[in-house]
Length: 494
Image (cartoon, rainbow, N blue to C red; front, side):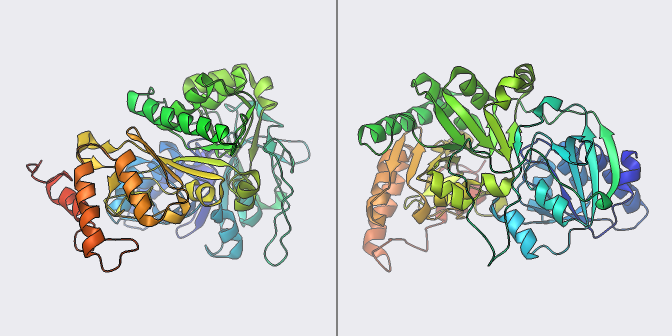
């Protein structure tokens, strides 16, 4: 059927689960047609909103069009679309930010209610009715299992040669019937290459031919390179100390400029035969697979630029031997992250002097994207590393603050903090010891005296002396930014 016919199957108030993870493998046609239907209904004075569940962020063709149409009542679990972000922060819709490893199991627990409809992109359908997964797996298995009805988008733009690159695990169960997941290496296959679906659930098949969101990556800048160099020096130190080998441990890496700089640094550092157990395959990982720095990468999605797509399609036979895409509940599973001993490398918005990390909310309440999978890996990994420039907005915001304005990762989950200024190794340190190391190693020179002054006075005037804080001014930097547009005192209002 057409996308318009499929969109007509969606009714106001439904909970609709869609494929998609970091701009890959999301439905391209039905959401746009649905947004048009919503706009028509709104123009006629009738309300039309749905709850939308995905794997992670999608693209303007899904999140963007539905947000502009005012068609979402609730969205989870991760997003990156500017229009969607604006509406969430303006209070026009609800957003639930949760750990990516929790989404599937919370759906199975019934926490989100009934899933009325799933809209899933696939590469194709086999003769016996199995689905060939697309460029992301995400929560698709769960959506197909749980949804009352299913619409399939078959996208001819996706490479048919991806068939066989996926590992869909059907061994999970609800408590108290769970069994150990028998995965002990990043390159191990424990499932099957296809998604299953009950044919009786299928209410529509829509043919499409559109590419994923092709996001160009910003070139690696000096700040990102400095952060990467600090990390690489640390890894070399850990090898010399006997805590790591030259094969390191499976790497998990977020997406973005700093992540690309780290990946490029691994190649420069002469590492060979590494493995990744992560969420997203980006351009930098393709390059590392080609030159042998990485020997294998396990993830749940791609996030490639146009050049990355061309590279992947040109050498898909090679990459099919070195990449597995798994379900999101397996790629981010705490049991597996802990067993494999992953090195978790993630970005942050800010950290406070004690190591509490804010990954999601600027000045405490303006959500940027979401926690994603960073908590899954930071809490359970062998090493949890958070990285960020020491300042933002031309120095108006400090990345190191007295108290984090929002906490996604507590001080108990943070081992290493890195800015372009340096690296703070917080392992084995008490709170006051951590604070001094963070101030000395990670803060920007313009903010360092302010942080030291706060910490010195807090050690004297705090209610308790274990984790000293002056509660009357702990968030004063953030309040100053709200009032003047700058965290630094004495700066004229912008």
